View (cartoon, rainbow, N blue to C red):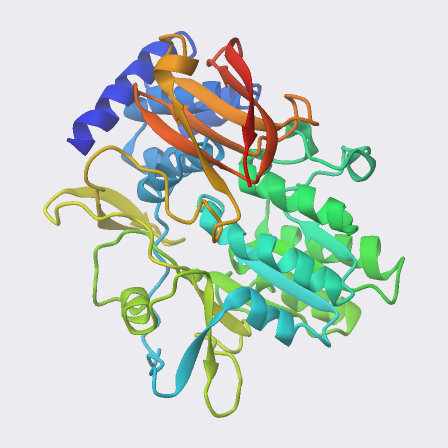
Length: 441
């Protein structure tokens, strides 16, 4: 059932994007060239889905990663993880922590306690898994209360000079990652709390050059100007590592930032233990979730010493266990995926039934469900994006939440209490419907 549903949606999108790419085979160079001028998130998604069958097997892997990013930005969170799960590499020397020696603690509270005397806190994310942004959003008010006054985000660009004064991000504020609603909420919240928001990413293509540029940008834009600064950094994957390893022989951002500032970063990893729906109940992640039953992003604290648990202590200080979220289907229904940066082929289980929005979207009860349906909002046009904007912000602002209907159906947006504008639009950017709504307390 799920496979037929996905194929039906992709077939519709292929027809939609047929004018963008010809019948000839597409190389990854062609694909990247053609994507460059596409500013519409849904049009980008449409192009990727229709180009995928025309790519070689090796190029298709890169395209699937791009598709997963696009799905994440369009509110298709389960699909984004399933299409490019990035299973972390196994840690052969890992000793599973025992519940007799370790207790599960809310990650936001634990990290805030550890950050009390620190000058730099770094948290990472998996770019196609918005669940790894929940912790950063929860940490912002806690770290601001401790005196942290600068917030740096990898997705921000340096061309939006009005961002700090305006108070909310727009699509031109940074990279494609920023189009995802929870990332937008992170930036919006940081600004509201009074953080100085800092872009720091580099356009360098080489890993060595990029890590060096990022560290130099953070040092020059924060500590060189304000020696008393306290900095919170939201980065991707191995940028938060304080030792070589996950980037090979390259010194990661956190390692370089320590050298430039003399401050020891508190580095928090969220990418090693998260739900990629592998169906492997014997892997380290599933053993941890079975033993500690996390409901929110969770860290383990030693019952005797009070120290936090890290799977790789030399590289980062704390391992976060991101809760199990995806609904598993029949174990016999397997779809292909890839394993981490080595891209080793694996299989993952396809969720049963129609794709559902993940259970973390209420953010622990802070956001409430607002039902939406394609019949009312999409004017019989599919695919169709339905998004909610804060009533005080224009359509160009990053949405508070959004969902993309690839087929007819109904789901829910998840929103903080307050007034919103709903807007539905198609792959050409045409507005299909608009209405105002109020989300009650």
